[in-house]
Length: 174
Image (cartoon, rainbow, N blue to C red):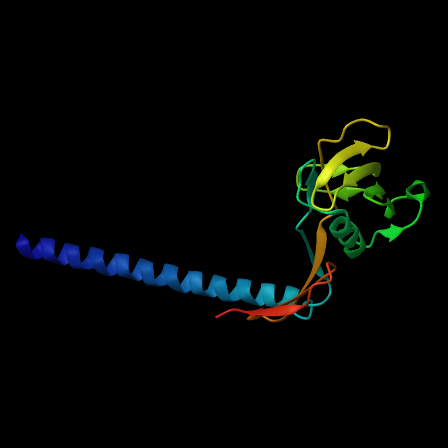
């Protein structure tokens, strides 16, 4: 009786081990198959679609520690050009501490901002007043986010450049 239980356990163990080996072999074949499909699909497409990351939107509000000169510099980095704001989006005019700008249409994570004329008054150290073009108070305004261009030449090195005028750099993964 003890012998028959021992044989039954042995046969059951051999059956379970055989099933595990067959399942592992099947899984390995499936993973190799998927690897070939993914490799074939993405081979040679490293540069076909450039990656863009939008970051660092400048948040403006009354009392924000942003001087008029700094705000004008930021607008230039964001490729706003001096001129008449009524001529269209992406244009600003500075008269002393008053900056009139026609903000561009911008998509943020939580909203889509349509083009709008904005008046911002700044002292030498902070924002003192903000209004929409129609005169209504503007409690807060987010400038267009900076646009980063990402490129992956080597999977262990990230090369980046930005439209904010900062130096390009590289970060190496360990």
